[in-house]
Length: 182
Image (cartoon, rainbow, N blue to C red):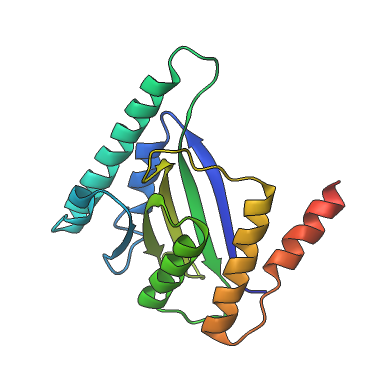
């Protein structure tokens, strides 16, 4: 079927936990991360443990800043997004190829976003987890609507097809499901 992308909003309390989850040593075969407009101190980590600490610290800082901006309004502020790109089980894809695909995806769909992505090899299918700040480089909020979601699926289908020379129908399947639910 292809490579599938999903993204969901996170709120106060979940960012640092998600950052810890995506960088956990038991899931990461090759200790590599993709840094997309991430703060320099996060990217300059010298060891994997330092990467984990710096990413969690950044996530905590983002949460504190969003909470302060949110003030006393009702509800929880959107602090970050959790993303995942999953490849079919039968597709052999290297860590480097998965990171290249993710970098292209982020460049095309979220060029100004601040994110870190990590490839996991702890399941039958290669997948990439993305932690993305809810604020872009210019400090404006990332906004994901239905058009953006459709665009994300189409972009990932194109990337997958170019990478594997196999047809991907995820964008079509997602739209069929959406129409069915209506």
